[in-house]
Length: 387
Ligand SMILES: Cc1ncc(COP(=O)(O)O)c(C=O)c1O
View 1 (spheres, protein in one colour):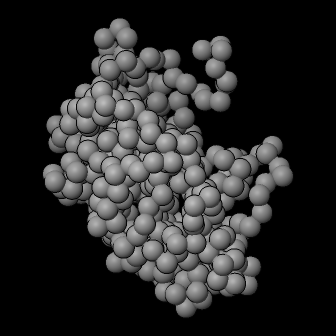
View 2 (view 1 turned 180 degrees about the vertical axis):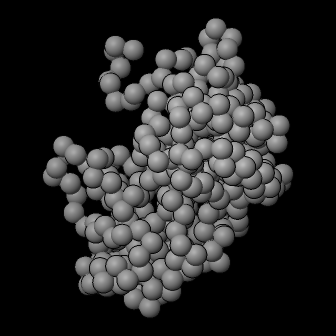
């Protein structure tokens, strides 16, 4: 791929087709997909109803500018709001863009209400995207390297440490932004009660709580949105990845009184919420809710985690298995970055984050039999690697 910028370390395989939890390469080789396009194809590849919705819309109209009414946007926004918290939604095309929108919303809200801020606290190990503002918000130095000067207004605090958070808030801060479970950071689950404490802290200090649900949203953790495990509500929530089951679409949902600081001209996107994206998101959300995919994910996630924990006793190099729903991290003691490449020979797609965490984020419709197959293959791969 010499004409493409070299920004990814790509594995030597060309995937051309997918169905459910399985994908095929150009030579017909098949792979069990434990990556799902990085937590994207939550309903499985080429879901027939999502494909049908896209085809039907494609025959009518691909794109329509936001200069005109797009009623499908209202349907999708209503579905998001009715299944999360009372909100108004802005549509964009990716997770980073959704977080950019959230950051702009925080800033304008703070300015318009002449309150504290508009600085935002984020956390060590977090990941919020690769645009300048979102990488500045990200709590990992490696993604920022070489991109100075970075936008100001972000402060990074130790993830999981409530005292550090209390100590970091001053009048420059207007919001706290956090992933309910850190994904790129290595499937890091916050301590019990942490998000609730943060919510209370925000209420006490008049701060906005922004939840980055780009990876945890759309059923991934066993609830439609990750925060639903915690008995709290955000003020702003961002979505992308699973929202279109593979069709690029992102969203920012905000409490109505927060959303109203955006008026015509304050934020926009040419493609954001176009009819094709909305057809995919509408079909995806409908199926997700009708078929209780989050509930299915809870059950299968528990089954897969149990299988992995049983396997763990045979591997002294596995330090810990962290999981919520079908967002699973196998923390190893050593560098296992070569495993995704070795896994290709075994017919399985695997992903490693932070060098030592095998992250499993398969389609949420994965069957028990496929979970058994994954455990068996991972067991073999780790044995061969001496983990
Ligand atoms: C929590 C979180 N936020 C934001 C992003 C950025 O999303 P995108 O790559 O769609 O811009 C990601 C991507 O991995 C993510 O996991």
